[in-house]
Image (tube, rainbow, N blue to C red; front, top):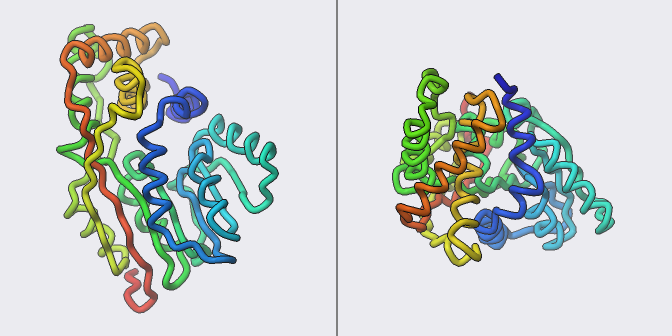
Length: 271
């Protein structure tokens, strides 16, 4: 079976960057919520190709650490950093679960990353923040989100193609929480001033064709499922069958995301 890190590295990079207009829109929405101040230290938790990182660094005289598990994405980010001659951004490859900085950042930003890294990321983010530091992030919602609906389509495609045996031990690794789950989990690690809001967005305006739209959604949804298939030919078959079902059935294009803002206060720290 293919290593998980190889799949992720192949998934992220130029192809994903070109098909992530919705994610970029939500990232900009988050950035506009933040009151950046000169001299602040910011962490971009799961930065991808650095699209949002570059937008943040233009907001004020701040310095940013930005990491992602995908080496291809970090390569793209560093190439752009060199081209733009930014000195105050540090891009590096890192698995979120191995990130271990303590009390370092004034702001932690994370756009649609915790769906991949899971709720254990909240504690990692909390510990990385300074006293009075702020976490601002987005998460794809569970039951109402597009990913929930696409999961059903992918499982149908697996059945249609006779791939069920390959997925006997399949477990959905994507974190799809409900709004109250997120609030409770943030409180449990010590966050206060917690705000979690639902935002509905129709994805169609961000893409030129339905093919392009569904390809974007499926790139995300199929990432971990590719681990269970042995050949590139099988993975292409699964992608094409999922795309066929989407184009035939035309599932709703309204996605629901959670936008999060929370603050770390020392007096409420929980071991």
